[in-house]
Figure (tube, rainbow, N blue to C red):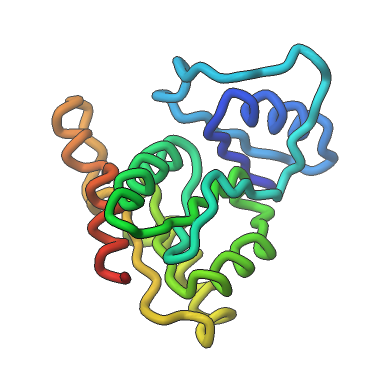
Length: 181
């Protein structure tokens, strides 16, 4: 089973077309807050390969791994960090299974610091698995622990103000990066 989580309109179309054409079952998840996102989407036929991450922002000091809506919050955090002289590389995973390990590993080898940011709960979330895999396979490359930025370990509230309280934003990503650099 493959798992796809686009963050842009371009990727949403290209990944959906790739998912439809794939011989294996593919779970395709779109974040509800991305439905109104505007972006360039060609009318021409194109595919975005499953299992290929996108480097949304190049950086030298820290790698930020994310997917779906959280990519936009990470990019905002990276912009704010740049004002303070911190160069953050933001990687949009786009596909959680298969995972683009080559892109992740290359970035970790370059920055030696990792923040994994997602909206799932911290305990047992995708970030925990990514942190474990990075710790197992790239431990010697790390200059510090892999830090997870995630939702609080509580049931997701229906109330918009409470939802904003539970979900991490750019400030949480910035705080995690500052712990590492």
